[in-house]
Image 1 (cartoon, protein in one colour):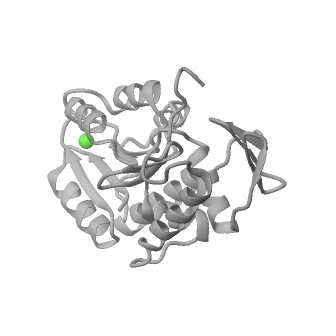
Image 2 (spheres, protein in one colour):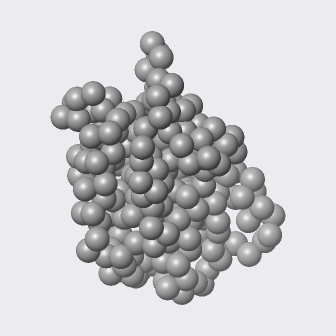
Length: 230
Ligand code: CA
């Protein structure tokens, strides 16, 4: 389940957003101040942040700046300030989208889905991905491991690309389902486990002790971050 962090100081808004997001099968965590929002982001590693601009403790722009300095977690700014300048600053900071208040919770859910889809599906600009000893050719749809061709199904290939594009980043099963199927159907998340099992059987020397695809307990999977020896 993708985890959404809401940083917003108006309890009524938080309540409504939480209810809509939870009904849409997102896990929701909340913070009512900018500084505690940043702490929550650091500790809980959400998949996306809904960030109010005007916050006590620490301004939303500063929170976004701090997050961007360290990671590329998607950010959607929520703002009651209508001045376009503020919105532009938000986007220049690397915010992925913004929503002006008052907004419909349905729109927020739709934007959250759209931004998450973009952030998972977006391949890196280079058409060949070199990670650990894998060479993944995005045009030819081939994978070589230490120079040797590995035979993957299209679904296994898409899953590998989604994860290997951002080593170290944890992906929820729903995100991987979207990345590999183009859509995520509730209740089908567990099919990802079967694909991961097959991928590991093809790539890993010891599938029980994976070197490429790691399990992130309670979340999903991630591609191993490059170690200094590689
Ligand atoms: Ca506010």
